[in-house]
Picture 1 (cartoon, protein in one colour):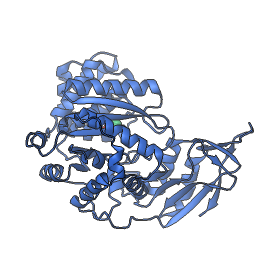
Picture 2 (tube, rainbow, N blue to C red):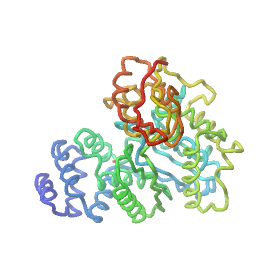
Picture 3 (cartoon, protein in one colour):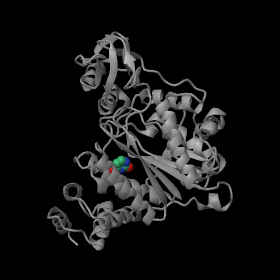
Picture 4 (cartoon, protein in one colour):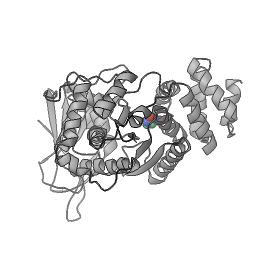
Length: 428
Ligand code: URA
């Protein structure tokens, strides 16, 4: 095969053959297809799309680029009743994995949650957990298996052996404007989840300004594509479409999101975070054959919190250690009385990223304390001068760019039909 022929086939709207796909993914992983060739092919896929069969073959090729994990011994030995995982397509304030994994594990299911770091304006589960003193993301396959057996839940980084083709391709897509493609997102996510070897998978497909899919029709198509890929590979897969037009919960960042997750595990926390955690837990339990329980009970009676504490400690973290706090803060206040009509997820995510919660380059560190705390959610009544958002960072020179990101993000509507008022700033 010749890389240029493969690129031309897709550039001209043709269908790639199974042999072409197997060859190009393997050759790229080995370095025999150059980055510039794969970036041209990714752009051709972005513009021309892929058929269902092509997406399935592309996913298979990405799985075949690395190892497959196997947790069947946990179920076979009776240590755990089933294995279940969830994946979110990425959002703002989306800390759901943190309370969800221990909640599901509290019901006897093993939850092998391989997670990632922040990408652009979306936060990363591992970046959040790393704000807990001592906690480490990297586990060997043996450590992961032992923790699943003894604790039930593990949230860790995918090892370098899992779908290495995706690892390379993802980094390339990130810098070539080819992230928001249904075939590329679906094959990226599902190759990792199928290689991980979970029995069932629940997908949280985000839709709205803070998601990669901005409209319902494309989110639905992404969901259907991933559910089909899972089913073909023998993974029981279902999907929820959930709103990402405004941030989830009241915190966006790293340590602040861990604190909110702990609040949920303690039986409190914001209603939208609790509701989504419980809805996803119910799906995962049902896929594991557990019905007739209300997952919320395990949040109220401390069982999920017990698993959380064991899970954090097993990975070197101190669940009782105070979480880092940002050194500086500034508050955005309402300019007028009214109802908070809009609080845009994308812009809040971008502000949090600029405050230091995310990274500009792959190798940059993130600030544990940086982020945004919300004091009101869309639909809430607010008074002139009342705080709407608190911006947090260790590096105050970042406030100006974060405020720029927030321009137009917050809209307070007068209750009697007046013109909407932008929010105004104040110092905290
Ligand atoms: N998450 C992934 O793992 N891959 C994508 O392409 C998008 C979100």
